[in-house]
Length: 178
Image (cartoon, rainbow, N blue to C red; front, side, top):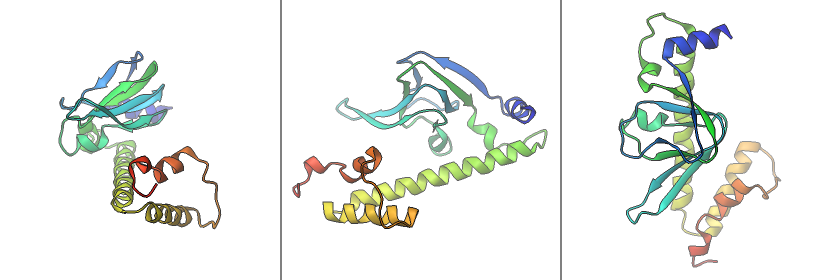
């Protein structure tokens, strides 16, 4: 508990409550904070040129948003809005990579963890781009099965998981192979 209090003090963390439907961040605005969902749910989305809402992700407890855009463009690349009453931990992006005046160990651990999170998200994005670049449904299914095998080292697994089906059937209705 003391370590968490020191971290909150050192990095200026604050917890804010948001009502359902309230915007936490709007696409194009400067980023002032990174968020971690403590309670509730946050939908991250973009608006297309035609005004259509494109849902990028839905974040539940422990989901983080803003960490990639904060260190690249400095503006929100998507909007974040609550889909339920929510509590979100907010902190400044500069607090992560700035030199800690108290030289606390927790600050170094947080920096290392943030790099791990951003690296993992980059890897997931790479896999999605690779999957989208495959031309046929057969190739997509084979690649998905290979990725599952590589991650589990099991020759059999259930395909009834919604995430797996979404991954496999992404845009299948638009495909000429269907």
